[in-house]
Image (cartoon, rainbow, N blue to C red; front, side, top):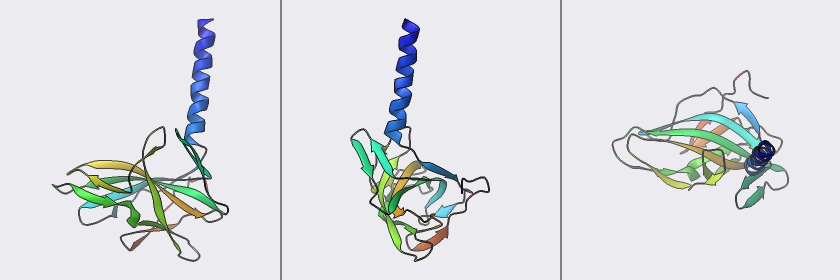
Length: 162
């Protein structure tokens, strides 16, 4: 009987985790080093897409004709002082129209979706992982982004789910 309860509890926990984190399409990228500014560098480690974001407070759904795009980033402050980060300077660019879509949320990396701040800081000689959330046209694949008015390309690996 105890074994049954353990299996039921584990199954319930697994289902709850899937519901809380949502279902996303994940793309592998070729990790490249980008510059936020002269002291802060970052990489994009993964790109995901989905129609909703689930948190402990409920679910958020992309408006009709759009999807959520998640850029998983690792930021490194190479300076010997605290630096400010403003994720509102991150934009995805529509590959056809070059329309800019700003980062709407910054989330902490982890098994659960936890909101972070769009305006943030990074300690001296520290590294931060953030998941930046954008609303983006549903039928487009994110191929370009800009940070502080510098345009970059996202390079997907050959094994990406394209």
